[in-house]
Image (cartoon, rainbow, N blue to C red; front, side, top):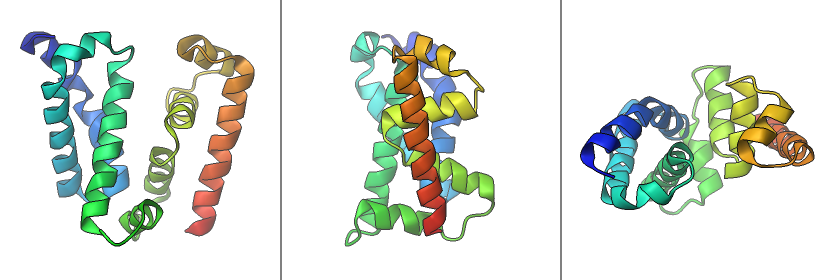
Length: 155
């Protein structure tokens, strides 16, 4: 992937990546640093991005990992769950807590929940776009919702 293609495909993802980073880091400056690190990592592997099925999903995975690494460095004697919990002190609103809860879901659950909640896609439409069966999508949604409820219960 050349620099022009990178600008057209990856740079527009900045806002989405920032939202994910901000939900985990709960600090604007840290979120910007995390997204910057992510963009550098994506730039360094730009020649391999043509083999990636979904550059957006790949970028979100990288930003989540960078954010968790950032939290680990910040709270190096805490485990990831403790670091994520520390990152949400105190949440500014319920939407921020929901974003944080969704950002901490495993990739497949997170992707399906985001498509259902943010994009208002049906189970069949999500199945068609992801390649999962409709039953698998329903199961991922159910598990994701349960983990979000558990996340709220801990708050």
